[in-house]
Image (cartoon, rainbow, N blue to C red; front, side, top):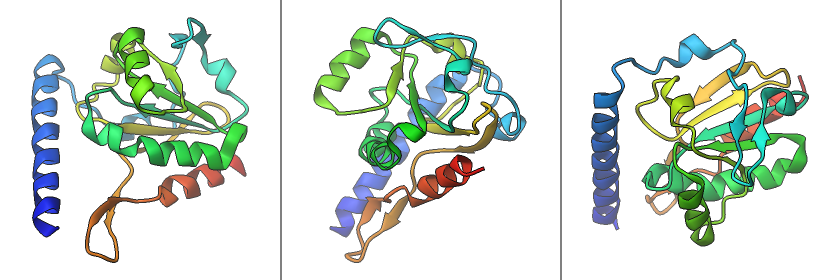
Length: 183
């Protein structure tokens, strides 16, 4: 089992390295989360996968978790179930948005095999590029006014009682969302 963990971590690292390397060749700027903390989430309007549009004003009044992801990102896929579980805990008291550069057809095809309950925002390369993100997933926590309060990578992995590497239950994300909800 330890050899499986080692191989899994090695493959995950290689995927992240090559994805970062190829994306970095396009993007010469660097994603700096500290520059975004305390600023308004720069959402004017973006297309939602059901042919509607989402705006920042629609998100205001509730905290929001924004997940930047794409369908061939293994760490992104690995955290989907935990993100769904987090959404289930909070139901409609928090906005849950997933943003990808991929087109609507690609995302719909992916969603036929993978249950992902967040509102899907597609075709957003220009928007994602404006952040200069080089690795994924990225999760932004917005307060009720649409201000970015926290930025995290993917949900952390942990070692379970059998000494296996597993996705955590998202308790860090849950705690921070509760904080935003009751502010």
